[in-house]
Length: 212
Ligand code: FE2
Figure 1 (spheres, rainbow, N blue to C red):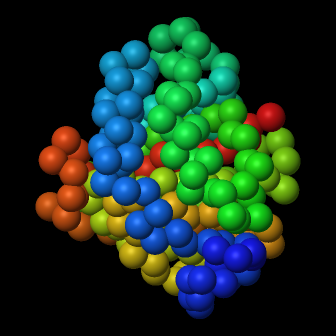
Figure 2: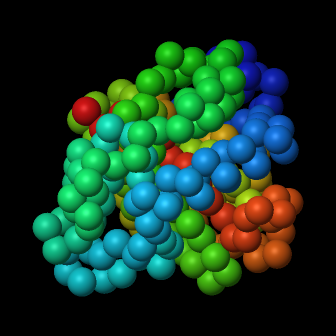
């Protein structure tokens, strides 16, 4: 999928790109601190599924839209359903880092309007799922990893398809697009104590989407 992928050949399926250590340490710290600022306005909390299940990762959002789940189900909203206030603006550091990371890829023109932020601590997982609440599946989902390393699972198009495990570390960016956009994916394990960032324990994933 473009020149960057050619430089980093992997066994990953077509449409996925793993940009290893694409964000330098200083940028990682900037993003982690900007996330802490976002979370002062829109606090991290455990979203619930419609059926009452609880996500083990804490979540919040920034951008024009945020993804949330509660008794009303999965959806993108312009307001934080917990507070009634608009989601915090996407920090400039987010859009700048994304632009740098994606330059040279086939999705360099990606302009997200939502960023779902997940906070994982030791023992936190994310079950295999598809991201399908967005308006146009031609747009990718781009994830920035910060802090502790994790095993990211990338599966097939059926939940029962055996997934491949990919180690994602602080500063990595992972693109799910093209024919892999609808693959099941999840987080199997967080490697606690592996965060290289003094300001961050655990792992943050910044998942950029185009909701509308
Ligand atoms: Fe997802």
